[in-house]
Structures are given as structure tokens and as C-alpha cells.
Amino acid sequence: MSPAFDLIVIGAGPAGCRAALAASRHGVSVLLIDEAAAAGGQVHRAPAGGLVLKLDEDGAKGDELRRRIAQSAITLRFGCRVWSVASGFRVDVAGHGGHEAFTAPRLIAATGAYERVVPFPGWTLPGVIGLAAATILIKSQGMLPGRRIVLAGCGPLLLLVASKVLAAGGEIAAIADLSGPADWLATLPRVLRRPGLAMRGAGWAVTIGRARVPVHFRHGVRAATGPDRVERVEIGPVDRSGAPAAGNTISLAADTLAVGHGLVPGAEIPRLLRADMIFDRRRGGWVPQVDELGRTSLPGLYAVGDGAGIEGAEPALLAGELAGLTAARDAGRISAATYEHEVAKPSRGRASYAPFADAMADLMALRPEQVAGIPAEAVVCRCEDVTRAEIENAAAAGARDVNQMKHFTRCGMGPCQGRMCGDVAAELLAQSRKVPRHAVGYWTGRPPLRPVPLADLVGSFDYADIPIPTPAPL
Image (cartoon, rainbow, N blue to C red; front, side, top):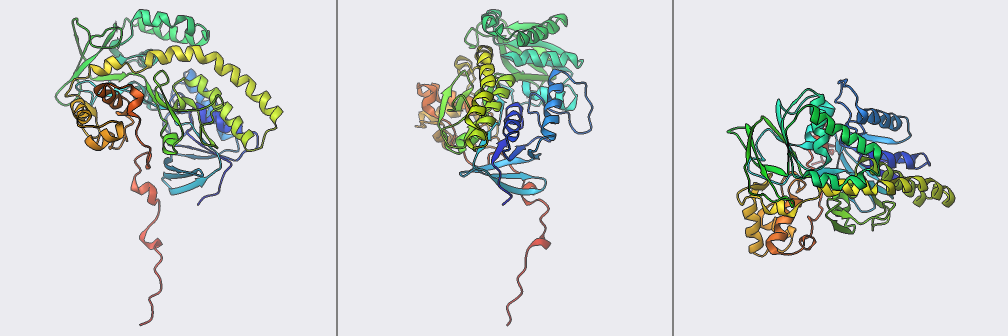
């Protein structure tokens, strides 16, 4: 067992870094763990080793965050995968150096989110990637996801990815947005509460307009086709709820389809530890029940950032600050007066972001009618090739919640452990049973939280390291 710490922070995105820094400056011994090779998370992702890329605003903020982390007293474990978290907050980590285990009386889960894709025929073809995956390629590798790209989905990520593709010299065949102009306009009163962010989004829209990219509002992907990879993308009209609507479809030649239908909180650690969870469609689905300071129902466990509900990067930073300060206060490292003074500003700041965050979350929330339009033969769980029809058959056979459906179909048993399919599969089960979404529950958390290569658990261990006892005398 490795040395114990006062606080372990899992996830080195905006929320996790800010939490670790806030706690560390008050004398809390902090361990910060992340799978990536450097801090920053998805928003402030660092370029891959050896690459020197032109920095945008996100890249500059990421460099500053990484500088502050490097100059702090925080103990770092990057390039490591957390595969189990147990009560008492024992954290098991696998990396190139082998297995390590750490303990702390307090744990902050800042595990971010993963993107949701509502299935359609052909979504498993090579050349179909997520919108967030496209940003990873551009930010960390300095490369485009394809030569001729169709972007589809909903929410601000569509505009962000389009602007980055165009800035990198890419060709966008078309953008298919589930929302309509009226949906975007309806967000304005809340969006304008944060004029800086509003202007940034407006800049993305201007970039798209200047490039004369065809934008098809109230359109969604009907299918991606090609013998071995994507060659054409068919899009068609949808109604206000996201359901397929009557009208002409459009067939687009493309070698890449980047698609995303919002984000799902990465709340595996609170689920694994059996913290209280609530269903909040606006916040992305099942999220840990937390107070305004990030405390969950389990003493010593905090959840912040998009892993505690989709809010965005700026609110995540402030939520991380609040949780780090609260962990330090709970550890007895800050006086009550100092604590009240230091949490006041981030508390006000986070509250000021709430209208903007709600507006963007509403655009990205899962649309039940879109899920209802998934064809019966479409694969929902790509790890286990489980189709919509098989999920509905499981419901007809008596599966009452997602864990029973998992037993009946193997949906969610693959390497992703339901991260890619769980949200949509649960929606389908609820619709099949004609019950509210929360009634079908969520996957039971189990280790390993992520697939772990055996070599990462073994590390440099060799047969020569096996102790061989002296033979007993005959």
C-alpha cells in the first residue's frame, strides 16, 4: 500500500485541478490522478508529447492550469487508470509502473462526462466519430478527423467543432442541427447573462457563415452508409421534439461523420460507492445528489464538474474550487471565518453561470422522441451488438430495470460498461414498459471501472521476482 493522503482527487480536468489547488494551498496533502499524460481534461487538453500546436483560448488556459499544477505541492499520477475505489477511499490505480493503491479519508470525483450518440443505421461504421472525439484529434494531435466531414447533433459543441475544423483548413459538407433557429433564439435571455461566452458562440456562428457551410436546422442523421467505411450520410427533417418528420432527405458524400447528442455525466465512482443518485434530464441523466459545495450523501465523498451534472467548463472550475475548500475545511485546515470568506466569491460566480449553463444543457438534453425513432434493427450496444428490438424483447419478457435488461441481453457488459449505450438503452426500456425514465434505474457500479491491460497491473514484475522457498529437507 502506498502512503496515505488527506485528499485524493480523481480527474485532472478544470474541476479536479481547481479542487486540488484550492485544498493544497491550505496545507492539505493531495494526490491528483488522471488517465491523460497531462492535466487539462477535454476542454484544456494538452497536445500529444512532442507536438507544438498553435494555441487558442482553451489551449492558453490549459497551459496556465498545467503550470500552476506543476508548481504546487500536489502529488501527481498521470497516465494512470483508476480501476477500483473502495470504502474508506482506497483507490486502486494501474499504470505503466504497475499497480498502486492509495488511501485518503476524503475523495473528490471529478471524472467529467462522455458524449451521447443516439443510434442510427451505420453508426458503427469506421469514419463515424463523436463530436468530442473530433476535438481531441484537433487539440491533441493537430489533425482533422477526415477530408470531407458532416457534423450532426445538437448543442454548442456543433458550433465549436465546426469552427475548429474550419480553422484547421477542413471541409465541412454540411451541419445537421436537431434544433431550429427558434430553439437557439429562445436561449438568448439566459445566454446574454454571460456576454463573454455569448460573444464567443457568436464568433463561431460568424465563422461558419463566412465559410458558407450549409446548415440544416431541425435535421438529424437517418443513416451512414458505405461498404467498409462511411461514404455517404443521409440526413432528414425532424420535428421540434427530435422525432423523424416527413420531408425530403438529403444524401451527402463524406468520409467522416462527427455526431453527438449531448453529454452524459461520468458518475461511476459515486454509483460504485452507493452514494444517493437522482435523475435529472437537464443535467444529463443520473447524477449524484450533492449540495452546493459538492458534498454527496457519503461523508468524505465529493463530486464536481460535469461528472456531477452537465454545466460546462467555467461552472466546473468554480465547483472544483468550492469542493477543494470544503474538503480542506472538513479536514480542519481552514478556520470557519476564512472558509466563509473564501467560498463567497466562487459561490456567487457559480450562481451567475446557472442561467447560461441551463440554456446550453436544455439544447443537449436527451430527446425521448428521438430515441423512439431508432429503427428496430439498429445496434444500441455496440460492444455486444444488442439491437433496439432485443431490448424491447427483454422488456416484454419481464425485464423491469436496466440491470435485469443487462442480464437478459448482455447490453452494457462490454468494455465500455454501458457508458456509450446506457442512457439510450434505459430510455428505450422505459418507453417499452411505459414507465417514467427514473423507474428503470441505472447500472449497478462494479469494478473494474475501466478496462485494464494486464501489463499495467503487472508492471515490471518478472518470474525472477517470484520468491522461491528453500526446499524442505528430505
